[in-house]
Length: 271
Ligand SMILES: C[S@@+](CC[C@H](N)C(=O)[O-])C[C@H]1O[C@@H](n2cnc3c(N)ncnc32)[C@H](O)[C@@H]1O
Image (cartoon, protein in one colour):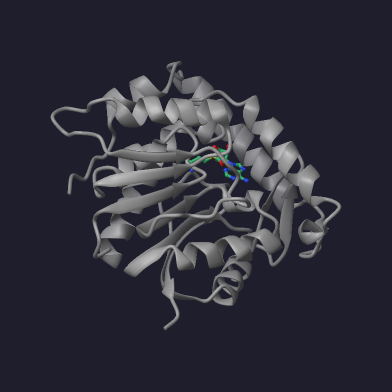
């Protein structure tokens, strides 16, 4: 496996604007300040996001937020487009360690413009399906995941333009990957989603998630993008409640200081 996964050609295609060095630093500073502000935000009761009254508002607000975000890598990563290569390399290492047996079909949940599909999943799986609620991102993902890269044929499968809270898979997958999206689900919908994903796995397949986690024991709410950052233990409990067994858990290394910790977790159904 190549140590440098930075696909400059792809990034040039994905990012409409070239981010100057000083702008990148400004973004990093903003993200840092944002991260600190979030860490200091008041505690959100775990049940609040499961309250029926707040649920439609919680999803509608997120949809509106993402509709205003540019369909670029920078947009997907909150202005930190430059961490994409480090992120993808960390995920590649993680997948290499867990050794996914099947190579036919993977699912990218909350796929955005297909950054993860294109760079991580498509080189490893014959076909990749995507779930993405935003129509513009889904269209961009189709474009980026069907363009030729060298001599390799692309392998885009279905794009499901729907929220994960409503998504029920009709295929069986060798790998389901969820990245930087689960904070957009309520606690109740998170467990229900995990259950549906567990049932969508081929024998021997893995469900993986890669998410920000709070370093405190509290759920931190972000009103701007309508998401929550959960403590790691809450994700672990939710996975177990949904019938998963956690087989590997790794913290992403080499991200800029001041961001939330990011964890990758691989699970299999409990037998
Ligand atoms: C931070 S971006 C991450 C995109 C991609 N996973 C990546 O790492 O490049 C979050 C994505 O989640 C999508 N999203 C937000 N709420 C969602 C939901 N309820 N169901 C599915 N996708 C959702 C957004 O539209 C956006 O594309």
